[in-house]
Image (tube, rainbow, N blue to C red; front, side):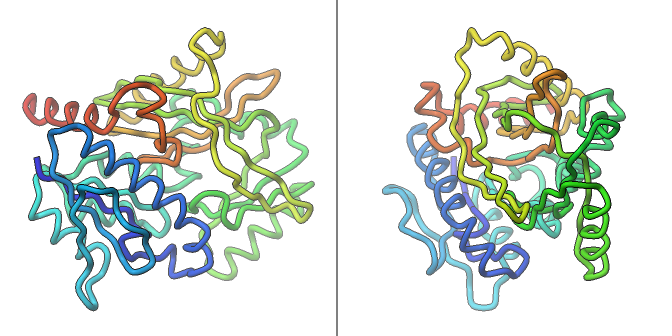
Length: 315
C-alpha cells in the first residue's frame, strides 16, 4: 500500500501565518510525523512518502520525502501527492479551517481520518460543547453557576496558544470583546478545576475503544496565560476504577459523532466532585500518539489502516 503522510508544519505550513506559534508547535508536529511514519513502515505493509521542508528534520529511515513546488500551497501539495498514493494521512491543526480544507481537497477514498462533519464540529470549541451538551454529555457550562474563574481562547485554536484564564467573568468578557473587535475567533467558557486529562481513542462508525488515559501538563502563568508542557501518556493502569467511566464516556462521544474515525483525542478535566467534564475533541492524530504503539505493544497506524480498509469493503 502506498501511503502519503503530511504533517502540516513540517510539510511547509504555518499556523495562521504566525511564525512564532509555528516555532512553538513545530517540535510536536515533527514528533507526531516521525512516530506515524515509523509505525507505518514497521507494519511491513506500506511504502511511505512524507512531506518535508527546509525547517524540518530528517525523516525516519525508509521513508521517501516529498517537497512542495515553488508557490504551491500546502493543500495543493497534499492533494497532488495524495492522488499519487493509495491513501493520505494528514496531521493538521483545525485553526482557520485548515484540517477541513485538506479533507475537502483529498476526500474519499484516499482520506484517512474523520469525516467532514466531525472535523467541522471538532474545529470549533463552542460548536463542540454545544453538540456534546445537546447529547447530554458533560461540558463546562454545567458548572457555570459555581464558576469562579473563566477562560477565553481561540474558538479554533491549536494547543494552549492565546488562551487566558480570568479571575472573574467581567474581565473575561472584556477580553472576549477585544478579540472580537480585532476580528479574532474566540470563545469564553467556565474554567473547570481539576485534573487535566486526555483520552486516546480508536474510533470507527460510532464506536470507540479507549486506548489510554493521558495527563496533560499545563501550567497557568501569573498573567493568566497557559503554558503547555507536554503530555504523559497512559498514566492510569487498567485496574483504575475511573477508567471504566471514561471508556463509557468515550463511547457516548463516538455515538454522538459517528464520523469520528481512526485515532482521535478528547481533552477533559476530572473534577473532584463531579467527575469528567469534556473540553474539546481533536479529530486527528494528537501528541499522545508519540510512543503509544510501543507502550501498548500494538501498531496503531496499522490498525487504523485495517479498519478503514474494512469500512471501504463494507461500503
